[in-house]
Image (cartoon, rainbow, N blue to C red; front, side):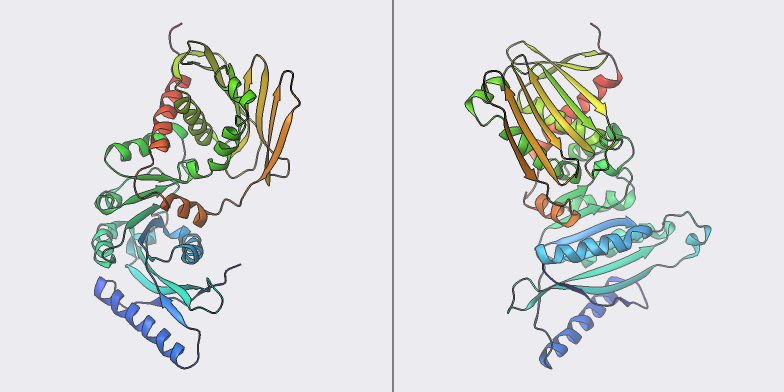
Length: 373
């Protein structure tokens, strides 16, 4: 496992871009001197600007993620943390800032790869100063990625002033209250021209892969075009994942919604046949809150189910007249840093996610408002 070293944070006496850059220069100068006197060799690298918008309660968490991300994609991280306002004393706070470095020994015998983190804390009434400071600290000629690390719907003046410079905005709709509201906010940002990366979608990658592989065999592929019923089981916070997964299925198979039934939504296949889509809530502690997906035809039952241990998925295809086919696939840890790296593999927009999101929102409306029979 790659070792990660984070230097002690160095607090600044004043908070402005010039003071921050001077402190960073001193930080790297001290590291260079240490290297020249027999210390570890260091290589400073920056593949992208990583702007993290969060609140003061999550600074430790986002710092841990940034440190792990350094080993995968070194960057200049700028953490802009707003006080929650829960304490009346917050309004009397002054802006604070500090700098530190994260270094990872990626390849034995080679220099440690280092990125830097700038953390700025501002009380709510000083948040208006954050965009100007952040913009002046961006490294030129590399992409700008913003991570909305709040557990609330994205918005506010800070994001509004920064999203125009972002090559990508990463958020996590699964951790926001209200599945439809969270997904609708993502859709609004996309409509405004923002390239969205959704960690809720990233967690579905292994599920989508396993569902697709159920139909690799010709006998199973034949069943794909005659699906009649789909059941998705999810936990209490899994409505977002369930809707996105259902939206992905509907868009990939060119289904359209026609009506609502007491137990779910009816979709029409391209051949005119109907598919009943049902959601069921179950108990699960999984991060993505998904428990199982079942796809049924008159002659087959295909399932992807999370194991009782939670560390792998079990896929099973039962087709009339054929021996059952089963396989298990390990579930990789849903590490936030790894999910962010996966999102960064896309230079800009993700058309498959955007199509699934639109369909998921249509599904959510059908589930709330019955269509006439």
